[in-house]
Amino acid sequence: MATRAKVDETDFNSKEFEKNYRLLSESQKQWDLRKKFLERYWDQYDEDRLLCLAQCYVNMRCLGCKYSKSLDSLVEELAKEIE
Image 1 (spheres, rainbow, N blue to C red):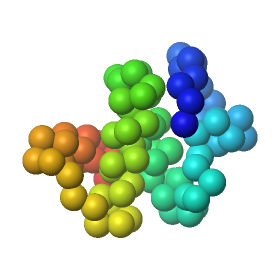
Image 2 (cartoon, one colour; image 1 turned 90 degrees about the vertical axis):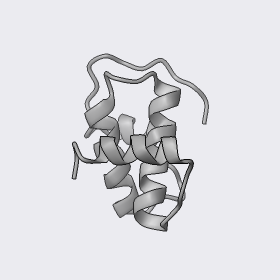
Image 3 (cartoon, rainbow, N blue to C red; image 1 turned 60 degrees about the vertical axis):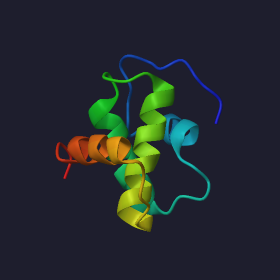
Image 4 (cartoon, rainbow, N blue to C red; image 1 turned 45 degrees about the vertical axis):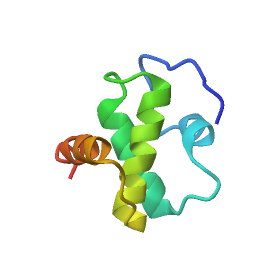
């Protein structure tokens, strides 16, 4: 996924946002989870980091993936804000 300039005021429900950030392989459930994560933390992380964290979150919730202790802890802490 190519890095794009993040816009400060984003319409998260726009087709353009979905076109830019939804993965072709994502189910609706996965996209809804990832979009919610992106919305919540949009202003707190740079785009590359945010996209990585959001993908880890979806992988953990939907696919049961496990990551390093530090990453796992961070994602779990961030998840508390949106679940």
